[in-house]
Length: 386
Image 1: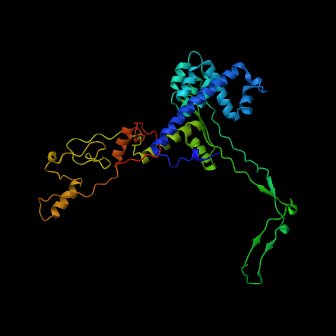
Image 2: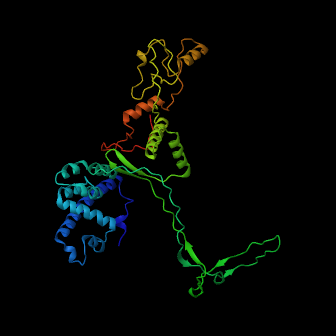
Image 3: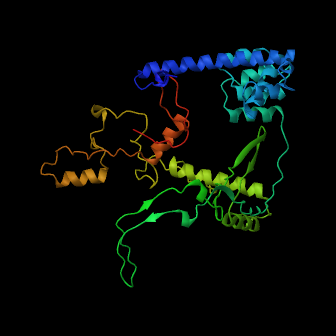
């Protein structure tokens, strides 16, 4: 088979993107046709003639699907057999196969039109939230249990270890006398014949440890289940928080409050968001005062407004970004009192006030747009650029 078909290094960028979009549309249409055929095979029970006891076995043995793939396709195919609009949505790429398989148990003749319309373009996390709204579940009881230490897995014998007698090692002039060691001039390692292999000391390989990731599972429209594993220090901090709380709170309330405060600190540090305070805000400064508060941003620094027209600027203040007291000091040191004070290079680092304005204006979301006007959906690792 020639590999030239899969060599795309010389393809133009625009042709590569157009080809990928066309293949994506073709794959969606092909998946819809596959689900339609699978639903008809299930309706006629043709898998019996293929020596399969069920459609699931037919998908595994004849179509070569994996267990997860076969399950998702069968759920979606049977749902499409009841509601043919699913095939059209999958063909257009409005609803993914996994989304249909997760929504299938909750679709009825009364709600399938509205539910499928709401599921268009949703991510799997949003689909799970939609499922939780259709079939809410009770809260998970808070509990803190000790994870038992897993015993060391049994060693897996992969290959017998070659005996040291069967490895011919050729060296020359190796001296290990007291205090002196001469380096060998050459080492040669040759593979032993199969007959000399011994199984006295088997070669074992330890499997890689399996790390369980945290799970956030929606239970109802406003409730989620969080399953995590914490260390000893975090467990002691959790117990200390329970002891200090009045009344004594359960683990769920403490974890929820800790997450809210941690997110608030991150927003204050990353986005310059003002943190909540329990004390009432200070009274506003009278309009006649000229001394701003220490943390109050300068009024001439804004995120969106252009610089004022120099012709309309007041004559009493210097037309620079230099603070007033610095400008007066520079003017006093100048040989000509009416000389124009040159402003230093303006700092490109945004102030905290500007960062707050930009964050609120852009909704904590990247503002980059593609050539067709689609805005980037990234909400993490954002930076403020001027």
